[in-house]
Image (cartoon, rainbow, N blue to C red; front, side, top):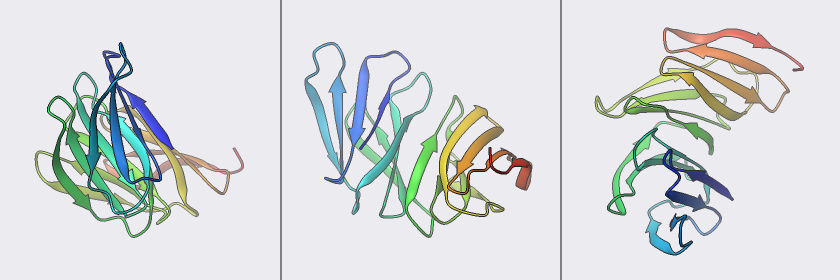
Length: 161
């Protein structure tokens, strides 16, 4: 199970084993939309800051982009070779994701491109953006790493963190 709340606090999105996203109004806790599209459990969700654009990752190895103002599917992003387990986004029209394939990917939505980042020793369980160019990860082997979109390997890694 995973969840995320929009920047303005009005919308909650949840995902899980049923392979769909449920979009909730946080004032009434009524379901606004039930969105289908993933072929595996939804493992992570994130909002683009100050928008109702949502990114979801799944065991089906895809990242999907959703417009939660209209409850519509936007596009699928392919590249991960294993389950996507964490995703994050800030202000720019991009997201970063990580997964069991030991990679990070920066998705540039408007350009329809992705940047691939390798160098993790094990699966990357958590990814969080610091700013639009840098992010941190935490891996199953206990390491944390600092990454930048300017270098394909971690800028810094601390083992046994």
